[in-house]
Image (tube, rainbow, N blue to C red; front, top):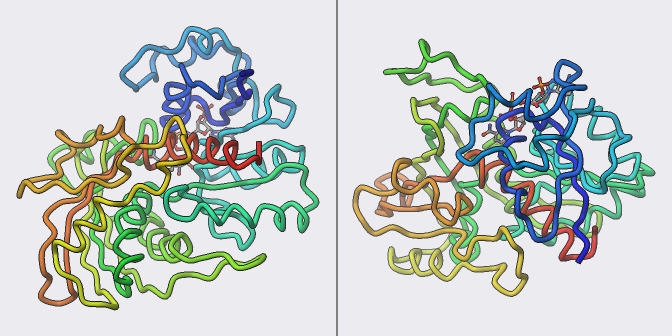
Length: 349
Ligand code: NAP
C-alpha cells in the first residue's frame, strides 16, 4: 500500500517532534515535509533539532535530512498534522484547509468552533459527520479536525464508559500537570524545581468547555453538548511527562464501585476498526492503592492508554478517582495521529 504523505506543521516543537517520532515506522503514513517558523525554515531538520530533540529515540534518518519549510500551503503532502503555537494556528490551519489539505490539529484555536470536530475516536467518532457542513459552509476543499487539550483527553476518556453506563452530571477535577505540557523550553527550572505553580493560563476554561462538547452528540449539522457541569483547578508540578488528575463525579443513576470498574474494563470501542495507534485498552483500571503514578504508568499502551485508580465513594459527590495520561502522546501527538488514522479508516483521506 502506498503510504499517505504527511507534513508536520510546528515540527520543531515538543509535540511536533513527538509526531515525527511516532510516524517513524508507521504502516500508513510517511513524513514528507516538516515546517516551522521562519526562524527555522531553510535549514535541515537534523541540524535544527540537534540541541532540541527531547524524545527518547534518535531522529528518524529520512526526516533528519528534510529541509524545514515555512508553514505555507505549498507543501508536498496530503495530510497536515499541526503542532503549531496557538499564536499562529488560526490562520495557518485555515489556509491549509482552504487549499485542500486535511488538517489534524493539536492547537486550541479551532476546537470550539461549531463545525469542527473535537475528536477522540474512542469517544465521539460520529462527530466527523460535521466535516461535510464545514467544507460546504467555508467552501474549503480540505477540512480541519482537532484533538482536545492534554488534560481533557485523559478526563474525557475516563468519563466516557462511566457516562454511557450511569450518566455523569457533575465533575470536579484538580490537575497536576507535567512541565512538557508547556512546550519547549517551557517553564524555567528555577520556577518549577521543588515547587508547584497553581496556575496554567486558559487551562481551567478549556477543561470546563471542551469536555461537554466531546461527550455530547452530533445531530445533522450541529453538536449537542452533554448536560454536564465541570469545575477544574490546574497546577503545574515538577514531573517531566504525564498529567495526573483527581476527579470527583456526580452520577444520574446509582452505581456500585465494581459496576463502574467493569464499565471501564469493558471499554474497547475501536476493537473492530484496526487502527495502528489505537491502544488495546484505552482506559485501564489499576487496583493497587498507590497507582497510577507518572514514573510507573505514563507509558501504558505506548503512551496511548489512560490509567485510572483509587475509585472510592465521595462524601460530597458520588465517587472520586485518580487518572493519569501521557500529555505529549495520548494528549497531543498520538491523538493527532490517531485522528488521522480514523479519518483514513472512515474514507475521509
Ligand atoms: P512548542 O514546543 O512551543 O512548539 C511550537 C511550534 O510552533 C514550533 O515548531 C515553532 O517553530 C512553531 N511556531 C512558532 N511560531 C511560529 C510561526 N510564527 N510560524 C510557524 N510556526 C511557528 O509547543 P508544543 O508543546 O509542541 O505545542 C504545540 C501545540 O500543541 C500548541 O498549540 C499547544 O498548545 C498544543 N498542545 C501541546 C501539548 C503538550 O503537552 N505540550 C498538549 C496538547 C496540545 P520554531 O521552532 O521555528 O519557533
